[in-house]
Length: 309
Image 1: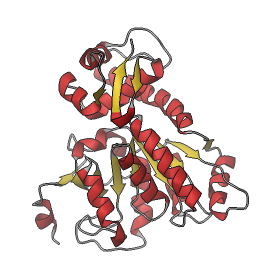
Image 2: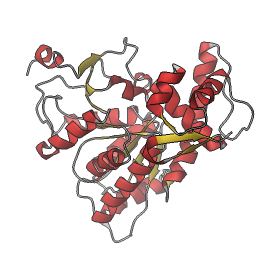
Image 3: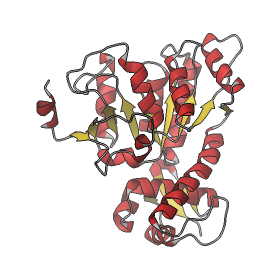
Image 4: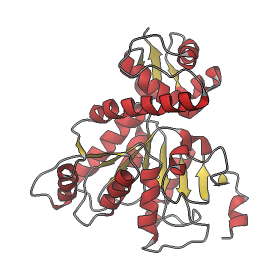
């Protein structure tokens, strides 16, 4: 399919670094892609993203862990980013969908081709749920092995952190983790049995400094501080008052006050808060994470939040 024909679809978009919708974190990596093809919702690219990656030959326990972590983290406001591959990637996408969260699949082909083909329904479900498929490759680009390591740098580049669930010593997930480290992003790994060959890559990452995690809350606590720093940097750069740190109980700045006012006292979902507050979905999601860490809001089932203070 030609690029022009593909772009005529209502859910098809093309972004360049000059566009406001181009992901800010992706601009920071070495050699950001000059074009980004997106199928689905562009706004999802501004959400705080966590990459979850791992072996295509996942064990049942590993797939269950990826699904559980993705579901929990999606319910806490993270967009789950992965590569649409078999095994851990697919489990992560499905976990986010099960929590009615958002998920992004970064592809190593043109977006008119779903690889593996058996994931065509999963790709459609990701788009239908408000997520997106993303690729730097033009429509019509077929499956080339060399494209997937390039794809991996985008998975980590879009995300504030990368979680490796299961990985052998030759796994592409270790390439994603290496890119994350080079990009200055957090790397997390889940340990496994010393007898499990797809745990050895995680053990190597931990020995080399990746953060060992046992629960999804370990990641939330680590990344909320990072998100607070990112918001503070953004505020300083734009001349606004910087928000308080995640552990500070002082009154929030004007944007936080606006968000709390928009919440009122009844449970509400993030999309409704975007409409009420006039903030972007990315701002709302990251602020809700920080407010939850402060104890000012509580995450409920179904992607809803309730004000506590």
